[in-house]
Length: 450
Image 1 (tube, helix red, strand yellow):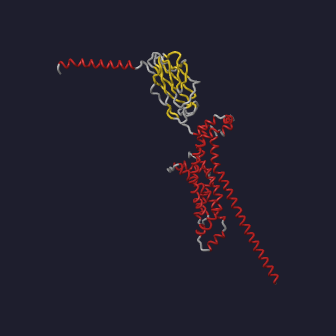
Image 2 (tube, helix red, strand yellow):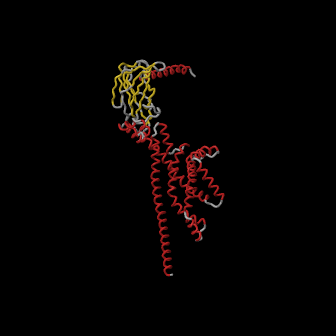
Image 3 (cartoon, helix red, strand yellow):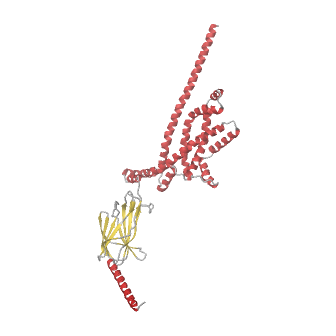
């Protein structure tokens, strides 16, 4: 390297250092000496509910906190509440947190002005002390649809270094939207007659209109689950019950013994116990079946035992003379049962089958004990969170929607079947009387001729 080159290197380095220092000075002159920074911005419900969940159209509060540097001299602070949000500044709290642990709270005197969604705070004296400016806005109602709510803030200092300067990096507040039923519940809660109704502890405990509205769609999901279980289990129970009935009427002792044992065990033990054995015993044996199919299996196997007795009684109610007449025509035993006995039997047992459907539907409530989300399970979940019995009343209404019409149908079917049997009996008695009268008349004529 030449001596000339060595002489130019220090000069170039000196020039580079000078340029860098100039840039730093320019940047420092352009930026304010102090700048407020967002420390936190949170929302919280004005209740004892889960503080992590903020609901739309529900009373909440906003807590905003920003750092203030020593000697910053903040004279005005503007807090922008998210658009579409309702708020009230009657209980507005403005304090300065100071000290090493920020536990010293000092109220900051201010003059408040509300301009649309902006809360403008003009401080009586500039804030010169270092700390955190804490602002709490109560009685906040976020939009019904919810979403990520963005709070805005800006400030002004006495030295003019900041004039309406916006504070960056403010986190959003997640708000959960509420459904139409929740909106209706809130509206009901504001009505004088509902407040008067709920002032009575008994009425509020068993039939709170606000909880009735919110629990209805939730319990409705359990209603569909119960209907689904019955819709699958009941058709499966019919062939099982018919097979067991035929086995009990069989002449083979083995078939008769198997069916009798099964029916006696199932009918002689509580369904609740059978559910527990299936849901807790089978996994111990290495059989892991999903809850819904296992619930259906338990229900249809239990119902099949009861249907067995219904079908057996129905078969035995058919006159033996009809079977004998069919056999005399050359029909086999199976043909007689299939074409003669069973069609008549089903007409006889329809009312009893309807009653069994009602019992099966009600018995699905026992599946709540093993975690199947049916009517009672959904209702119990709401009761645990609200402390009101109203969801159980809603579940009872869903049961009555099915059971009352079916009970009425059962009575109609029974009433229709009774006159037919009575009419047949009267016809038979009338025919017998007519035959007796003819026989008596024939005997009288024979005696007269003699």
